[in-house]
Image (cartoon, rainbow, N blue to C red; front, side, top):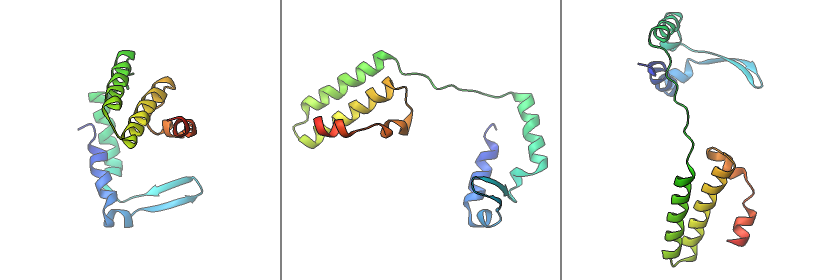
Length: 125
């Protein structure tokens, strides 16, 4: 029920009929989209607001990884690195371990780790 609007509007806009019916007003980065999607109607807006008032909003925060979990991951990667006889396999294990340490140390999420300078990893791996 909480994700009803996006569960309906995402497939609607992915269809050819839904994307053709969508119009855009604006230039550059500021745009307004006009859609014929039923979940963007005034009635549905009021319905969703009523549901929110009655049911409340569910918020789930991201949980941080503990140091114990990071150390266990590094131990696992190191064991696999020692067991792998191929240089390509060892390189992959080094990148996995480095990704985990960079993400944890920098408090990064997802793609932010790839924005770090990996020249040193490839040179000294």
